Length: 198
Ligand SMILES: Nc1nc2c(ncn2[C@@H]2O[C@H](COP(=O)(O)OP(=O)(O)OP(=O)(O)O)[C@@H](O)[C@H]2O)c(=O)[nH]1
Ligand SMILES: [Mg+2]
Image (cartoon, rainbow, N blue to C red):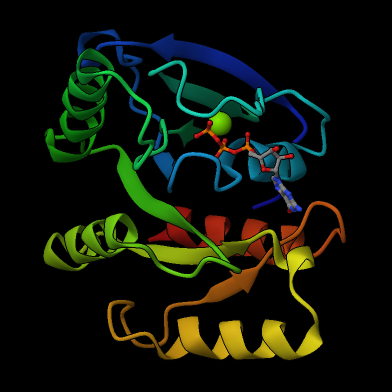
C-alpha cells in the first residue's frame, strides 16, 4: 500500500464522543503522557511543520483530533494524560472523552501508538495504559520519544530497559524517535502500516 502521509486533513476536533466522524475509516490512536511529543511525532509523520499543533503549555485543551491521511485512514491525536495542573473539570472532561473513546464499541480502532518519554521511562500512568492495552488485546507498538536528550550510553540503556520491560508485551517494537535528530520516523510509519493491515 503506497500511502502519501503528507496528504492530510484535520477532519475533526472533538470535545465529546458524540462528535466522532461517522464514517468507517480505520483509526490508529496516539496515546501518551501530556507533553511526551505526540503532536511532534504526528508532524514528523506528515512531514509538515506545525500541522498538528504543538505547545509548550501541555494539557490546556481537552480534545481529540482526527487527521485523515490520504483519504484512507485516521491518525488520532488523543489528549495526554498525567497533567497535574488540570482543574477537576478538565480532568473529568479528559476521562469522559478518552475513556469514552477507548472503551466504546469503536470497531474502527485498529491499534495504538504508545509514546513513552525515553529519558523519563514509563510512569505510573504509562503503566496503566500498558495494562489496558494488554487487558483489551489492543494491537500496539511503542515510540520512545525525545531520544536526542540521551547520550549514547543512556540511549542503549533506556532502549534495553523498555524492550525488556515486563509491562510491554514481548516482541512489541520499541522505536526510538527524535524530531531534532530525525530518527524513527520511517520505522514508525512502517509499523502504522502494519497495524492497518491487521
Ligand atoms: N528534545 C526534544 N523535544 C521534543 C521532541 N518532540 C517534542 N519535543 C518537545 O516537547 C514538547 C511537547 O511536544 P508536543 O508534541 O506538543 O507534545 P504532546 O504530547 O502533543 O503534548 P500535549 O498535546 O500537550 O499532550 C514541545 O516543547 C516539543 O518541542 C524531541 O524529539 N526532542
Ligand atoms: Mg499534542
